[in-house]
Image 1 (spheres, one colour):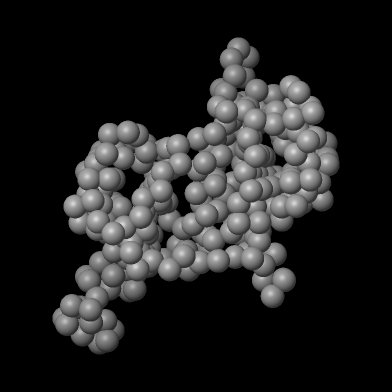
Image 2 (tube, rainbow, N blue to C red):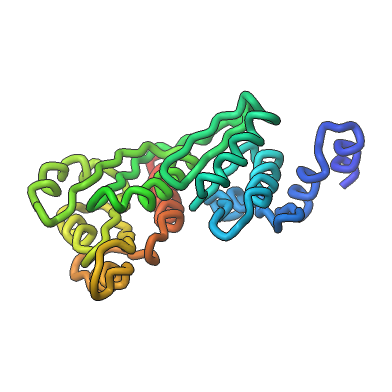
Length: 252
């Protein structure tokens, strides 16, 4: 405790960093940021942008960068991104911003990214699945795993799936996103000996076109796979990271 107080007094540690050390989280006007989640759970804290104001997004990102040297934001809108980008340009001009669809990573100049000796494959049935797949991809990249992403291999033309089969089999973990009836993860899981995480996507039209059809299809799969909630790219990515980390530890 005394060392923390002395560090705050001499300016080598900010009050937010000290609070994160003591409590594991930091409380601000925009809410609480779980700065210790990565150490405690093995997956990063993400800032869910949907429903938040641009000011709240900036405040939470500032806390994340101050306490963990990086920020991961999901479901971010164009106005929110513009506000975030302006904040970073003005206050941390040497920071790195990576944007994938509606998911954004911001890394401070002195951030040292981790590395995991494992590969996660990410496959999508069609272009519409891209934003959710990008969310999963950002989580995996944040953890330091190698990514091999292949898009638009839906089973409406099964040859598109089969001609990517070797790439899918090379991955240590697979995340497979699909809408409509959600058949792609089921088909892939029957062709590989790799853990498969199915992500139902809220795409399509008509009966159960909001992702319920895809979710039901994956849950009823006769091949072995795990299934996350509809559009839950972050959860799929985090689960893949936990599996990849276990595989890497076994290799070591």
